[in-house]
Length: 124
Image (cartoon, rainbow, N blue to C red; front, side, top):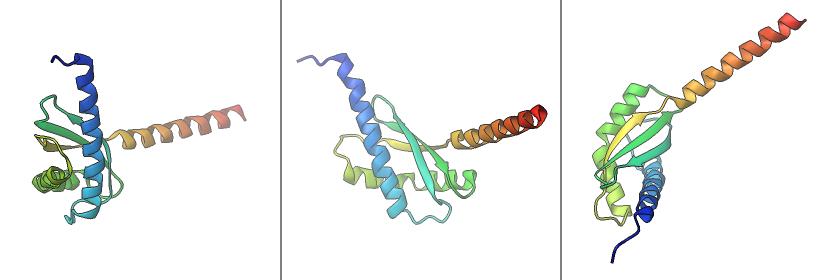
């Protein structure tokens, strides 16, 4: 029986979402690395063969370089935890990537606030 080609990408998205939920729980509850502080997982991209997963994260407190190093060092531990939770044949190798979107958003908000303040001063 031949499967529809359009149904395959949806499974990849569902697997990526489940990995993101399970990783968030594993990191917050079971990871004891002091380099990893409070982080937010912003997205997971899984390759079509489920061999690799890019995990994008942002930090609330801490150093991005140390946090990335800590997460990549704990990738095997986290993968093992995912293996126990997920019911798929291949659990992907995890690659953690720092996401600067929140930093850029706060910088843009600061620029907008400055522009609005200077504009209101010029009108007065």
